[in-house]
Image (cartoon, rainbow, N blue to C red; front, side):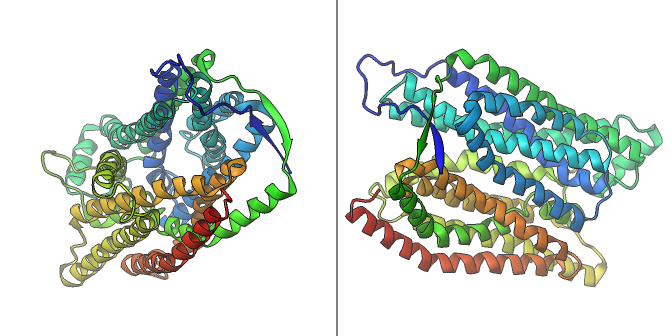
Length: 485
């Protein structure tokens, strides 16, 4: 087995090196902001596009959506391989951004075949780019600001900030753009009827001509398409400021291969359980949206019209932005030696919070069922799913952030990228399980029973993690004592 790596750079502080961020930070920040705005904006309205325009049932759209996300998290392996072996990170990003842009524009064509082609292009672009842009940024800091590790850490924080601000803005505004265009291109009488239905929180997709609905989604999808064009232009313009990539071929020694598989073996149980975390988590932008569309009163204070069923997803990005600095501050103040909030306990808390959020959706489903049995009223307060999104995101931040760091630190230096890619594959496997599981929603299992079973699976994985996590910690302690890192 062979790999290609960028030339090694020094980690020792160099005298005279600037302590200011290099100009490249601005191209990475705004390029990633635009790209993630386009990606998460497209995803925010994708599920309802499948059900309202493509006329797919929820149990058809859910598995297809999971297959798309599965590809997005599998293809980073391909992207890393292409960049390391042939093209380098910059040209891999630029080359695969072109079909990425094309996929955004094709997605607006109201045809099932066009949608599948678009999703394939989008998954290829997003997946291949994902592992390379952050790595190129890290290499840029290593080359241009050698030894300035805190500066590099700050750059990654700003990078992560740009992702979530971009996601927040697009998740809020793309449903607004879609609904605004739809209402303003209807005949006056029909518009009045649709506005009245929206005021009651009804799904109006069956009330309007399919052509009007198609146009509204096409306009909404055009917004992330042009954002992706902007992202590519910004990133390409920054080339003179990026790291110089020099690819070298190196064959792994037998000892490195053995160490690689030993590390995978130690992490196997942990990664298997993380797969079940994603299994429960990944319903939030598909089947949760279906439940909100059908069973939630979307009227909110200080707004005349109800929010769109897919608009609540903005809470995910908002809570990420707020919770990361909050958690970092609390952990640093309350547990500076990391004896209380250990990585294993943070991951366990992530499991429990995720199971609790799905449990909230299950309880909301049982409340709906109880009301339907009495007076046919099937709407619950928007506070139910809003609370579920907040609790889910807190669990995501604790588990995902901790596991990214854990996968990196647990891996030997020569294979950190490989182990991190294996961690990303857990999301792929979670979505693969959902392709089989999601068709049961509303058919074999009622929504509340579906969420209850899902919550119990995630809870069981969390309980199992208590034992697997302890075993992993013992293995890491033994490796450290033996000097194997």
